[in-house]
Length: 224
Image 1 (cartoon, one colour):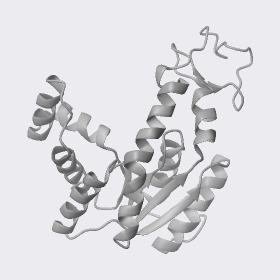
Image 2 (cartoon, rainbow, N blue to C red; image 1 turned 90 degrees about the horizontal axis):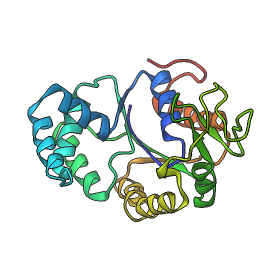
Image 3 (cartoon, rainbow, N blue to C red; image 1 turned 135 degrees about the vertical axis):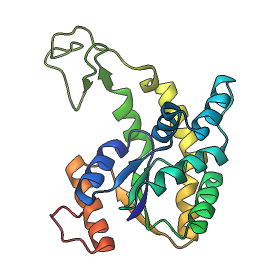
C-alpha cells in the first residue's frame, strides 16, 4: 500500500504511523527524515538542499519532492508518507512525479481532532530535559507534580508546546495542509477519516479495520 498520513499537530500521527508500518511492513517516509538522510549521505540532492539551508532560505518544493520520490523508489513493499505533502502545491508535484513513475497513492489516512482537544493535549505536555521522558498535567501525571519520575529533576514545557505556538501551528495546518485532503478526494483517492479524539488503541483499531479492507489483510494479523 502507498499511504499518506495527515492530521493536525498533536493528533498522534507519530504513534499511529509506528503501528501501521509494524503491522503492514511498510516504510516510514517523512520529508524531514529524507532531507537528513540525503545530507548525511552527501548526495547531490543533499548538497542542493544544504545550500538553501545555509543561506537561510526554504528548501524549494521541487527539491523536497525529488527527495521523496528517491525515498519512495527504495520502498518497493509500500510506504506511509508522514505529514507530507504539507500543501496542495506539494501534492500536485508529488502526484505528477508518481504518475510519471506509474504509481499513485492508495489512500489518505486523515486523523481528525478538534482544535480545543489539540490545545489541551499539547499545552499540557511536560518533558524532562535530561532523559526526554514526556508527561501530561492531566492524562499522564508524574508521581510528584513537576518532577521527573526518574529523579532527573524539574519538568519543563517545550517552547513549541506553549499556547501561542500551538495556536499558530494549528492556523498554518488549517490554511495549508488541511486542503491536501480535499485535493486527493477530488482526484478520486480513498480518504479514510479517522476520529482521533479517542484512546490510542481505539484509533489504531479503526485505522486497521479500514486498511485491512483496502489491502485484503486478515484482521488481527501482521500483514507483510
